[in-house]
Image (cartoon, rainbow, N blue to C red; front, side, top):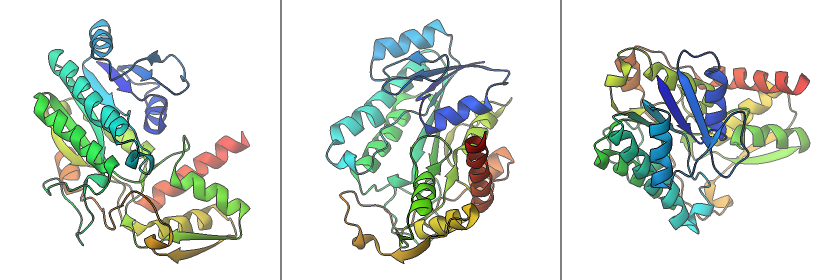
Length: 296
């Protein structure tokens, strides 16, 4: 099977590249504005003709869209740009996949929800995004649905890995340098290790699974606040930094965030017969991975 992965130089794309090194499938990774990693193909996913050419030239069977505009704050002042990448480009990919009779695997977010619930969101809850970023990601979902392509929309949250910029890496760095950190405790969700999400994406490529299309939630298991996550990073890393909780309003931001965005994983576990790793276990694994890479 020939698999096209957009956003190959991003966080999830880099992790996918690692876990697919010895895959039986052929993976073609693309990049655009970031530095290429390995044998990547440069591709502007907003360019319909360019996307169609790559899909045709490589006889693509599956497109995994890891590309996206992910700067939640900047999206408030660059909403047009966020929509161009998170919605218009997604429509281009969906239409190209449909024309080639390929399957589209599209990565979405918990930020499509408003966070007003007190119980986990399942796939049937109607999105109500609070921010420009959330609106652009929901528009991307709608573009996939409108295209008629065979699709998987995977909603995930609080993604981190040893690559790129993310909350875990930021806390790891700052807690090694500073004696005190204040972290918001009134935003609750679930961290997701990109390695676990990448393994789930590979599960979709297994025989019979590509027919189980639809919207799925995938994060790690469990619930925590950003404060809880920061405390766990410090404890596991051994950084002697005091972490104190604070309210969201103590850090004024442009983009509103959902206060509760835990995603229900019942559907994905039943449909694919898989377990979902607990967030603390995956965090421990990732931090050990980071330590090993630094010491090498």
